[in-house]
Image (cartoon, rainbow, N blue to C red; front, side):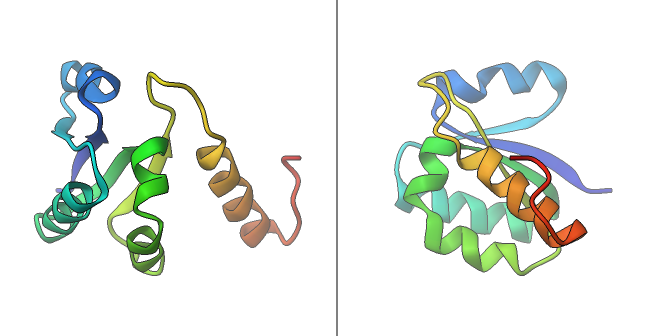
Length: 103
């Protein structure tokens, strides 16, 4: 059975622990990349990552985009929404249906 994780700044991910999601605080790209690689090896199926951290790790996230697991999903953090998560959803929908139906 696959596990679910959330990573990013502690204030943004702390609430996920009450839902049974494993939390992994990370504040910079180096730490985030190290944690994400470890989660992929530990059979995590879904990794929620704050948009702020994801924007610092874009090259590493591209590497995981071509893999089936883990699914890395950007989420807004306490500092606000950067639009990265919605952009990713739009790309996935466009790829699935052949056109951008979200915009």
